[in-house]
Length: 380
Image (cartoon, rainbow, N blue to C red):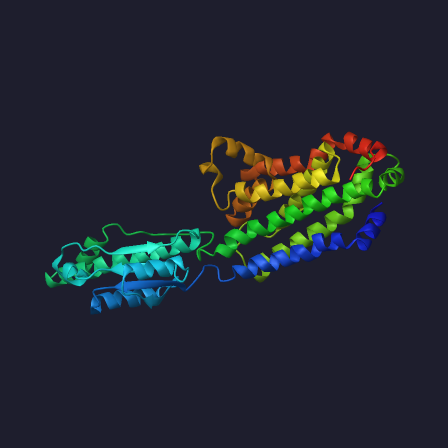
């Protein structure tokens, strides 16, 4: 039966495109799109109506930040706003006239900055740079005034920064978004392809009237039929997932303090859970069109509810409960806790058990699949 399945896969190019070509393209696309880790030199502008040496220094400091690049100076806020509306800049800093005099006189001047939060990542990074530059401006003036009063450097730093922050990012000290997103987006797309090709491969048995031949070769044993049919696919899927992991954690050197062996276990569980879910969906509705539609919908919803972009604990209680029904959510939790942060498997035993449950879900619908294979007539 596995040889039969191999021949079917060789004759039908859709298998190779969905199982090999497209997954590899997705791997290259996502990892290369974010290969810099963080967006750099995002365009922004300055409206400097004071035009003093102090404000020009602030502009140079802002331009020196990694995320920001001052690409234009505008004479008014209206011009800068129009440039932002034309998507020429992401943000601009407004320095009103007289700001330097007020700084030196200690009269608490006001500066304004505007940033586009349509893109959360660019808006957040530019907000951080603009907030930092405003803080540095006040600190520079405060330091000059305290020095004029005879304060020592230690006294000045104690006054300007009464609490010293000791910041640590143990798993991703570079704040590399490629590490955060590619390790969940690519597995999510791989699960999408596995869902679809699993439902497709069973549905085409009915469509092309091969189902009775398959059951005959298996001695009408549906368990043997399903194992023989999906064993070649499983080997290919696991190979692709391992290529993804080798590329990310070996070539790109993504951090994985949990160890390499956990990646092998996780790869096998990803494929088993995805195939199990695909078979289960087809068993619920033995229709090629309906099962593939449900699989694609479930895979797309997984990206929103996995918790990588927006934390599940911040969602409504109903959505938190619903998140347990998505295999990608449990894969992500096991990866995040055991591989990314290096904690033992026992800390994720429930998520690991849920992946195993998804892999075993076909057992509930195998009688219905057998009945479909032997009696159903394909309806387009």
